[in-house]
Image (tube, rainbow over all chains, first blue to last red; front, side, top):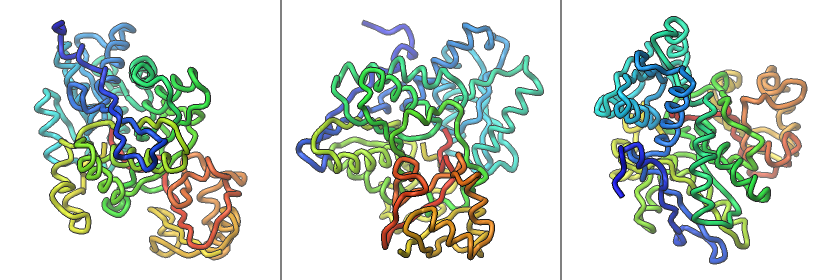
Length: 313
Length: 92
């Protein structure tokens, strides 16, 4: 049956048994391939939820411009939704973002502005918040880090899809970005079975990206419900990159960098189980990370120029 | 029990710019005591009322100690502790 618009193609992504990734015969690993969404990432789910809810509540009206501090997947997803629904989208980017990122956002019809002197997403968030405060009638900011529609999208779509495809789940692993995926899917899974373990994988660019964060920038996204977590595992970029390549070598799955961290964590968790099912949510495909040289260079040869200013998920 | 402690940003400044230092302790709390005796202010950067700040995450090898034994998490020779901000990386 034909779909009415590209927005109806969001969700219902495949859950793929990736048994070659499992370290033990009794433990099965499944990958939820969110790269199969229309713009190639899980963020399509939250973009449509946030915009629909804002339309229904009256916060977003046709005369307003959607404003979001993002240089990543969320910007691209919002651009798609805005284009279909006829809104303008303005993305606030930190200074360090590469031209490639800006190009991609513009290709999807987004307008971009740079937060001057912004070295991190935090600075871009502050600037966007100022812009909205100054001209509340002009802008509507979905603000994925604090928008309840973010976890709700995963509670109502991603979680049920996983359970529909695989009723028995022992561990769920996803990357920690806004916390929306872990909170939404985690809540849904635990309501059905309190024994499910929810593990956050935190990709840490550490050695490659210098001075990216300091402790003062520590930030807990308001949508993250930490009580849903049973563990948090940090994965360095070397391990993430290696696992991205392993996913390709063993399963022919072309995944993004955070997916490497998530799969690394899933394998680690699988090693500790005797038997059971581990679901790993892979947020996007590898397309947007080609310029990191991940697939063309050895890890040792990747320099700061390859990764500086790149977005990690 | 000698453990390597890896640091970011402001904590590096506190220890003279080093990215990693050695410290002693049978558990994380004792190790932080050891560091504070050598680098005054180290502990107050991380703890309030004896508890870890919400926006700081201490990883033992690669696991958040909050889900292990909190500050009483035991350490063994050769362990690596990483002290990181709550959200490391990511631009959404």
